Image: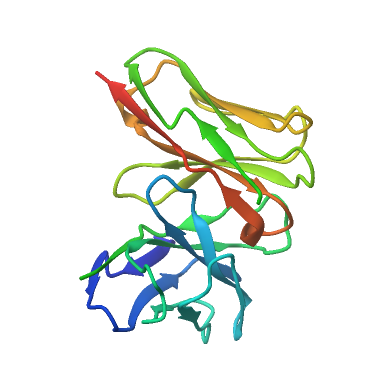
Length: 115
Length: 113
């Protein structure tokens, strides 16, 4: 089945540690995205990538880093510089970054808790 | 700051009843309006993507309308079923591409049997 796989589902991190969230897609989509969800708020864009070896900051990129070495993969690293990393993280992809009506396809998310 | 507001935040409906909820967004610089359904422990799934003022879309018992001039979209569910229980997200497209989506906080719908 085609789709987006995020791992792990739950992640616990000690303060001061970096942690990497995995996102893999087999939809052959060019564009990939990372969102963060906090209680009572809409999804907020962290980073996005429109093509391999290129990525752009979203609205809340501080304390995060990404890479896009392969079309299928877009891992997100939550660094120790992120002040409030406990949140739910969603990865998404879309077929064509240039189209107005392109829908996003989402993974099931990773819940990160800092202990 | 660009605001996308959904109301109500949560809703409880009896099975078989019809319901609707609202997404409000800026009336300027409009490119697209997306609706997603997000069931617990699953991935959000696209229901509709609408781009034209007056657009109406339908998928089974779910339909949506769009008014870009006044900045709102309605989502309707006819004859609610337990499987309709989910959070419904709307997202305002302020430009081309999904990276331009601004999401509302969602409406959490619970269908009581």
